[in-house]
Image (cartoon, rainbow, N blue to C red; front, side):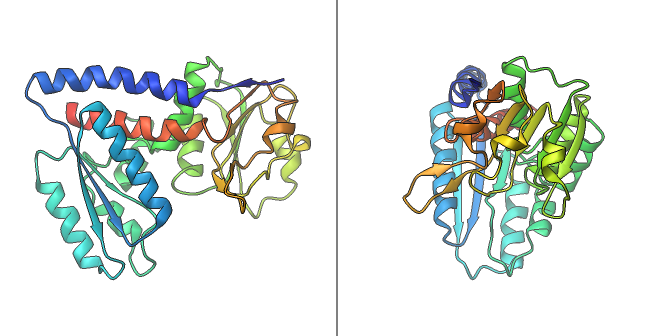
Length: 279
């Protein structure tokens, strides 16, 4: 039976140590301040923003929320981002995705100052990650790396397979693993013979948003399985991209959903905000 990777516990420890850092900053008259922008009325985004705001409050980071209407145009969004870029007291800026389809999210991410880009989506930070330079790394892949580190899971020289090639998780995840000297394969909807590839993975990361997609027959014995998926089922329950119950029988480590990667995403965002303040 696999050992459960407890993301909730690791995230709590990360937040405890960040609280100490923030207390020290505040004692020296430096108040960390973070701005989050949401466009439209996405109910999942509202929950994510609430989680981020709660985490900020808990750590002593001030949070400004900008909730823009569905009809906001590109110029208005860019004007807001530029005004936040110019405010010295704002250390970090986050644009909650998704945004309405008539807006260009890549253009918006590019507009966020790289030094305030705590979500790690500005092309400058993406490029620096590829070059293995110090930068802001997007929070979910960064959280996965922190979990592997905390559980002392060796990455160097291992075969790692990432299922999913999104700009938010899949691609930066590939780069993070590569920077730690893993041999990385990325799979997607056009990949042929997927099971043959996943069966060779020492570390398997599922990030596709398909409930219970990764089954027991796709996993090598004693592999480390990281489930990034969060899928809400018709009965209201939440499950990941991995068939947790059956895959647990064959792998050595596995992240649960909920309580695995999810809490780490928010913890690493807080870590990036504190890093931005110190920079």
